Amino acid sequence: MALPVVKTLADCVDFGKTVTPYVPQLSNLPNSVYGSISHPQTLKQIYIDTNPLITAFAFSLLLFPIFLLVSEATGNYSQVDRCWSILPTVFNAHYVTYAHLVGLETTRLDTLGAASIIWSARLTFNYWRRGGYSYGSEDYRWEILRKYISPPLFFLFNVMFISLAQPVLLFLITTPTYILLLTSRVDPTWTTADMVFSRAFVAFVMVSLFADQQQWNYQQTKKKYQETAKIPSDSKYDRDDLDRGFIVSGLWAWSRHPNFTAEQAVWVTLYQWSCWSTDTLFNWTGVGALAYLILFQASTWFTELVSSRKYPEYKDYQKLVGRFLPKRLGKIDLSDVDGDSVSRPGGSTASKGRQEKADINGATNGVQKK
Image (cartoon, rainbow, N blue to C red; front, side):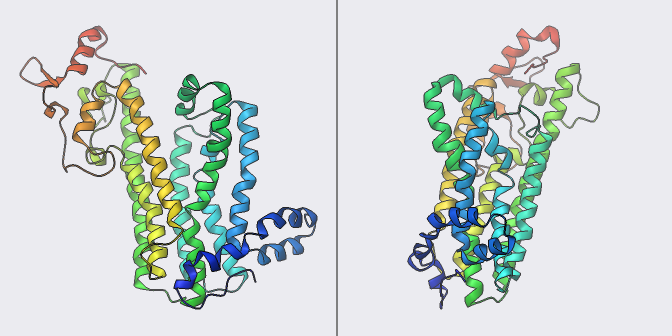
């Protein structure tokens, strides 16, 4: 069996014992699999004889040329995006499957596997209803980047980041599951802490789900409003809300990206679960969680750069509401920003940007076009 000998919980996070000795398997794996491709039983034995962390890493590397070739052939660079909601659960399911095959206690891993499926279901559904799986659909940020980066540089960006770094990152955020697999060899007991961490994992997924739904409801209402210049009868939003162009209520009054906040918390929770289970403050699998946080910092910065140019009041929103963590709780009023509001007839206020837009588009009842 290609698992390290671990006698203590501390051994489970010892990189020198649990990872380094198995790195040479990575170079031998392709030839072994290719030579046994038509022999299922032999492939099963190769699977069992290969350290599960190495198998998972090899799979993430296998995806690199596939994503690269498809993206360059089609000119669509959202190939990884289409698999984003699925790959982490594939990696987690791999660890669960391996544990079952070698006869380990799997209560902890089975629970994590179920939680991971819930995570995938939420993200996949939201991506689907937004048209992410439609033919030709692509993340708008790639299109914007191509305007500012020369084709050779963008190709290099595709090679190094889009097609290679992203699938490897999705492998890395699930490496704490490997630690949990190893702990089942030392202390397989299901504890209250396991219940807390697994429930927290799902709870953060639910927060993302609620945030997604609030955003979806707003965008669908705004779409109808823009098409008809009339506020839908079932709308929870007034004309000011819809003219603004972005949601500022519900969870979005506490955080500018509550779905992103919860998404990051999901994988930090998994990492912390591995730390708790091994009685350590930190371990090497934190590299994945840290890289995930860095990615969201960079991605969100770019997203907000686009939003602040598209919506005049977005900078006001940034002043009042924290990017991820709340600055304050409760409803917000963008007119609270000093020096950035103008009077309306009847004594009400609106931001300068929206007032100017209303003056220009008054003949069309303030309908904002995309």
